[in-house]
Amino acid sequence: MRLRLSVFSGLILLLLCSLLDSALAATPDTADIPDAGKPVPGSLVPAEGVGVRVLSHKGEWSSFFSMDGGGEEIFLITGKVENTSGKPLTAVKFQFELLDGDNVVVQRDYGYNRKAEMLRDEEYESGKKSLADMGVEKIAAGAQDDFRFIFFKKDIPEFQSYRIRVLESQP
Image (cartoon, rainbow, N blue to C red; front, side):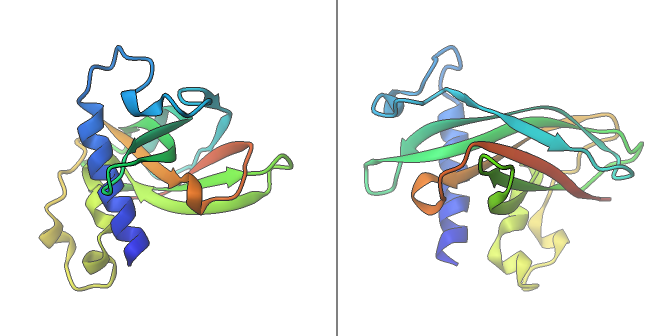
């Protein structure tokens, strides 16, 4: 539960940080991270029949201020997805994988498009809240939405690249 709350809190903080001027090459709290802003190679495993297309993605090291006032190193994967299904979609579920030099998965987790990030909430996942309770804004047919996922450096092993899998879309 603590890790999920930490990830959710991190996503909220990331949203606030994204409001900063995007012309900056690195956020002010990344000065002590030598690889901050340096891209990490990544790949995409497209899924047929899910009614979405990933338009872009990238992974890079970054940082943000943690709740205790210090900086916390993160690996951030971001991208953009398009609804090609011809109907509104409630959510797109992704699997994010970190790979070693032999392309073996060393860490994996899942997440949703930005409008549906709240579906990682423990009360929803445990069935205490319904989808209707979550107030997810749908992705209209032909529309686009962002996605993002954070791995905290302290919680992951060393890796060389990342991979994204589109697991499903929910009408």
